[in-house]
Length: 198
Image (cartoon, rainbow, N blue to C red; front, side, top):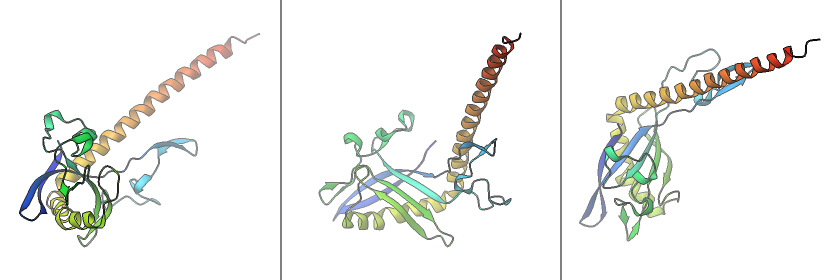
């Protein structure tokens, strides 16, 4: 289940539109590596703590939001850019000063004092917004996304942990499958080796 929020924006005088955003807390993507001859997790994003200390602050408070198409239906979710407003003509894109913003993506974090820190802001796919587009989004969208995150941080964290758990379980399953292949390869090599007896 996605975490969605609706934000009403004023695109010009006496003209407003309701936009729908998919918001999620970002997760680290640790990789399994051979370290000193042993299989272990690479400590990307400090997920496993450092120098014998555990990660005691939980997942980093980094968030990702994307503008969804106006006819978005959770039951028909594609899980790709096809869900986004402005992608290949999908409806729901914000029209600002006569120009469509197309696909809009926001990455931001919440600081210790609750301050919003903008990390990335993209329009029309992966284009940087013009100064006026940036001001518009900073005034009408970003603060409301931050408010939504503050009010729904527990649900967002729960979903993030579920995604992280699934990601790590899949990587462990791949590693187990690789070990099985290595064992089979070793067994075959040993059988061939036995055939070289005098």
